[in-house]
Image (cartoon, rainbow, N blue to C red; front, top):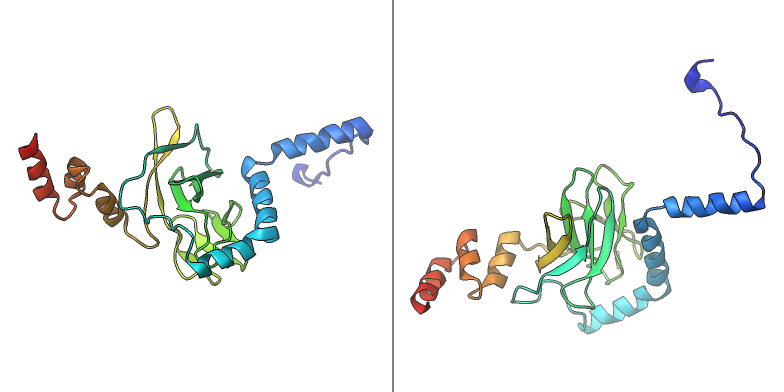
Length: 218
Ligand code: FES
């Protein structure tokens, strides 16, 4: 028998205390994301479906990217390791969002509100090379790298949240896009006349005029 075929030597059976200790260790070893996702599934299944459906039907839910102004930047987390996610609220306190560090180090952020009937969207790391964003209500699936719909009934991609990373590793949310809106269009719309220098750097339409007006004013 080769080394790799050898069965592991059986260890002593754990007594009650040792077994409880092992169980605690296993729970601690689970990622924060896994435990958080479990809680969100419970919340979604127990109430999110009905509430979300009513909210969307009545048109009362705020949608990410609705703001015409750049929201105030918000710290999401002190650090985010590859393969991990963190739930947060942005731009408002009611706006559920999720930030994910893909295994190649890319940082992506999305609204965590499903574009079908507004259930909570979960991060599943163990699906494909990049993982996926998954809605348990009707099996909706979104591409983790783009937010595009890859399966199920959601009619639109997840709205994007723009994230930045500081030198100390902290992750910040700095802006939003509407569902399917290109990043440049979203930023130009929100920079508007209030940040003419940024609009100019991005090459936003009309930025030359706004910058010239600003120069005359100062
Ligand atoms: Fe139906 Fe998300 S609410 S798939």
